[in-house]
Length: 366
Length: 171
Image: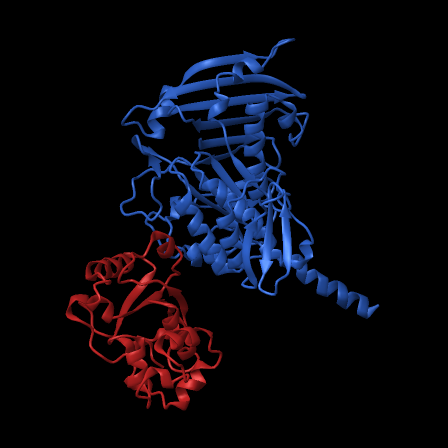
């Protein structure tokens, strides 16, 4: 499952927002392999998407919007979307282009008005051997169009999307892992030992299902049961994040084609470690999977990655998207400098912090 | 080449080499990140290449005796050098072949005649185990009159196609 384009209007903080995940030219000797469909080499897509931007710039909600759309398609429940409309008195809409496992491109468009789905359209285009994304979208054919009337059942339209082809993993900050979160013992062991050298090993419980023991060099033992740590205050914040990271890597290694949205899971992690984990994730990702990785770590801009892998978000009244690859025509290595010098106007405004001092001076004068 | 402007990335053959580089970087060589990988037997993966920061000088350190033992592969070393030099973040690749191995290099640069004397080890195997866990290795080296000008000074074998430029990383 590959997301090629997403339009959002009046959902969360998005208004007339569009993000595209194709890229125009084949890159020779790229360090991110398979940024195209193996069977359709001209159909190029961004497998690695690093989303950066100041706080509250839309990085997390972009993932949440994607997740809501997937859940809507899967569960056929419009409430999932309706509850995320920013202004309920105005029309909200989304349009998502998706490549599914049958190697067809699907476009799902939906309009919601006054708490009701007014239009749901599903289009499909066959991706031929030499087609690019841009060529394929010219060939969309209508599969289903449902316009609201009393009693209209939108389930029928969504039946055109094969449920078996759907799959995703979203990991947001503060999210608890689900009870059935899967772990590979070896991966959990390596990840947690990388975070905390005082860990001797991680072993799977032979008695209790979905339970792992963290054994420290001191002999102390700690358990992870159904994705949750018992006595978690023993672990550092970074090591706790490591558990969710190990779960994501376990899922990536399953090689099931699906998007992974890893949202600021490294906020307590040392910069070099974050870089190494990102590089590992790129390495183990299925060729037909996409990685969306949000971060504040500007050291990541120095990684040897194509410029098109980076997307910047900024928010004033609405979320705006900046594609540095459109500004930097070549694979320019000064991207880190450009961000540090605020070329994309993505640095946060800190003027209000100066006001705090003024408030202090005023109170001293009084 | 003023190394203060660059990031250094040491790719060393084994854990003993890592321990020695870690000790030396406090005093004798420029500091940098260390990764244990035998570049004579293993290809540097994209996983490693992607995480190399901009303006990095890669320093490849390996023993020459592994070729005599039939374990090292000159083709892999050359491929690794080419691959690293092609990386836009790599400014330079420095290759240091230890003649014949780390132990010989240490003996050459100190006043000991046998590597076992450095840490009073019972055997070479014990030395290897002890050097990894030694907490004051730099002090131990200095006690044996370690001379950095005598360390890593042998010429590289011709198949590497690169001179030994260890002087660049020495302080």
